[in-house]
Length: 203
Image (cartoon, rainbow, N blue to C red; front, side, top):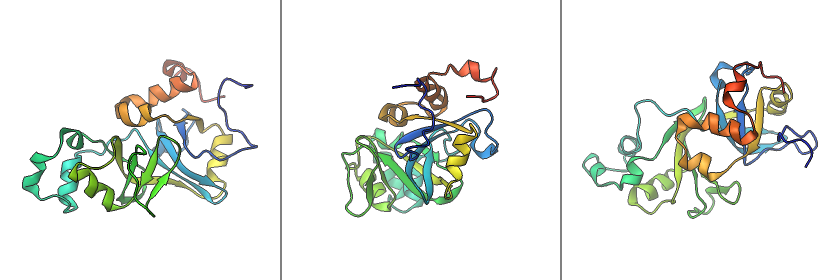
């Protein structure tokens, strides 16, 4: 299939369902060392979720209580899996809004967007209610906010070596600790993380 690295392809530029990995030359400090799952990408722009920025001092039970989905005394009855569900800072846009990336075993009509065979996005409070009841998706992460790009903006950043991209997989999103996702994504691309500190982002 030509080059080993899945570099940006000018002929088929849309990266829905791909992972972006920030290169050392990333100019925007908000995205330094970030790993982003691209949920939507078209001529109008792109939207993605940062996967490796855990929300400080905020966990899923607290959030369910804050949103009045769960009365405070009920939080101790939550399944352990719900209690340990990751809450991420998904990006600088609409940080008060929740976006759930989840396995395809859960679907809400009019609300759930299947992105690929293994990952869906639902951004309504109904999925959080389902999770609190114990009948939500098998695998899920909740992100507050998202990363957004205007028309052509992501393409320019890719062409200037701001990002590398690789196919996403459910293991990286649902089963890998947030602080290990950057190194894991780089290795999926074929780059040893230690090598990057010696380079300056030249592809």
